[in-house]
Image (cartoon, rainbow, N blue to C red):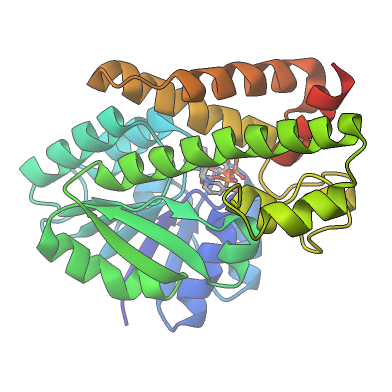
Amino acid sequence: MATIGFIGLGNMGLPMALNLAKAGHVVRGFDMAETQIQALVAGGGAAATSAAGAVDSAEVIVTMLPAGQHVRTVYGDSVIGRAPKGTLLIDCSTIDVESARAVAADAEAAGLPMVDAPVSGGVAGAAGATLTFMVGGADAAFKRAEPFLQAMGKTIVHAGGSGNGQAAKICNNMMLGISMVAVSEAFVMAEKLGLDTARLFAIASKASGQSWAMTSYCPVPGLVESAPSNRDFKPGFTASMMLKDLLLAQDAAEASNASTPLGHEAARLFKEYVESGHGAVDFSGIIQMLRER
Ligand code: NAD
């Protein structure tokens, strides 16, 4: 069992840290919010009084932070240059590919193996230790990280070198954002054409229009029991988070000279939805904006 420093105990980080503690590791956690640290302590973890304090005497550092600038700051100020050589670094935040690669390069130059390991599966997956991890980094770092990721998730996939975990995550979420808009458009059009949405669902879920956005997360209520549309679009995965990922995808498309016209349009639509006051609503709620147009 290892001593793990865990930085960023938010909606995702706290249940992930608790699962590492449940697996028998010593987990010393830090967050800007004291309540989150106390929740970790209540669940069997230990408190650190600063990010640097979480790093001291840890063999493994796990971070779950909001965005690229937080990851650059925490690693630059408190981890790299402080953690002893050989300490394994695992960043599970969803951030831009460029920041992930820059931080990993600095870490490796300091003798610290690092993987980027963003997740899919949301808060329920974090609580139930059923997350999917998309991992970027060298083979040896991946092998060392795997048992820790297994304590927090179910599916662990090595996507290649540094930053490739983030690349996989934004490619996946760009497909999801586009397909949620596509499903929403089709179901609203069905309503307007007088086609019963339950019948469209029965047909399209067995035909070539099938997608996860429809069969696991249908934006029309009454068709998929676990979908947020049945709970007044309570998230789930917020529209703000989807917008963040679609904007990361647009940055990556620009940096790599990839043509993503539908990704661009999905980002524009989710921006409109978030800016009209729906950032905290589940992303599948975008169907309401399309219906009202
Ligand atoms: P969150 O805002 O609930 O948690 C982030 C935490 O980081 C907060 O508690 C904040 O206080 C803390 N923090 C920020 N700066 C810090 C610093 N310098 N030192 C210590 N703590 C600091 O966000 P979340 O929902 O837990 O998401 C975290 C990451 O996971 C994001 O990158 C997000 O895109 C990704 N993600 C979230 C979901 C989801 O459904 N919530 C799903 C997949 C991926």
